[in-house]
Length: 187
Length: 229
View 1: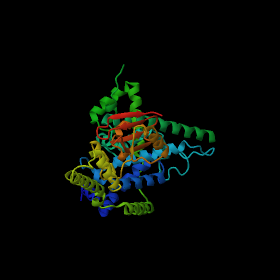
View 2: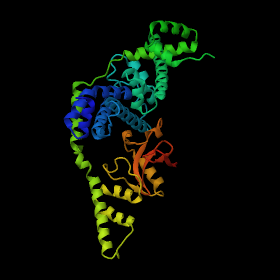
View 3: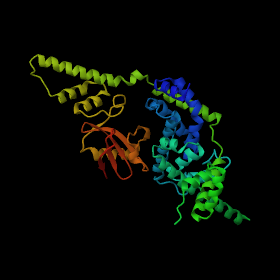
View 4: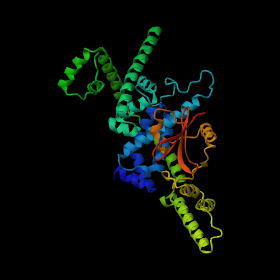
């Protein structure tokens, strides 16, 4: 049964169809949430919210595009909501020295086993640039599909992607230079 | 000034150019410092990202996710016919009002009231979700998307609008961007709150952004009013 068929059944309240859709795509949703939010617990929360939205709003999936395009859109919008809430919370005064969103903070990247520098650099990108980079360079979406998922024109995604890549490269160089500088100091 | 072609540089960095074309273009790029820098940035980013492992849920996380989602959908699961009850209730209320009005007119019409007033009466007697639909119908306004199937919208006047916006701004209520009809209007801006309301009987969407709130027509996405603090 195709994703589209399952989505139609979910819209009719079929929980088994929902389970099957979730089983097929839950890792993909989680991967996007983790890359967007950079924190495993936050990514799990966003993954949960995404699937609840899919269940509640499956009747809004028109079938005009692929189910995954719609799912990406729901996922990215959910991540934007979580990021917005995080930013609003950040405006509250915090105890001195407390920085929960420091990308280098211990525990921030329980998932990022192999390349913490890349993950750190990714998280330093503006949200819109990061979304474009995540969808195109990590999830392998075409510019067209990423544009549909983000609800913006293809040219906008391309611009965000190119600028995101260049910023990412600069962040990576900065991080590596900083790391080498630290090594020199210890030597 | 040299005009660098980012699309083609991206194609080169992504390995999408045919071998011969790639070699020729790479030589061309080498003669342009800006192009060389762009190509170097693109390659560094693409190489770094391609080396990232694909994150996956652990078995424990997967089980927890399934449990939580299942718990929520069991609580919220409603058959389709239940979601349509408010629409049926509203329709039934309208039919009842017209029927009663027609009977009263046939009896001499002494208690005849304007259609708006009769609909307002129906408003008070219909189900909790029905007033939205009835009120909108009384104003002859177009129904907002899904108005009949979702919960009732608050009704406010234009005088109450600034205070309503301030309340929305202060609530920190979670915004589900998938619920927003005119998301393109807040593109690139932080959406603090969004609410569908009846403003003077007309269904509108209020989008509270950083420095202002936009009152928009949910069908055309025309901005009707901009409210600034």
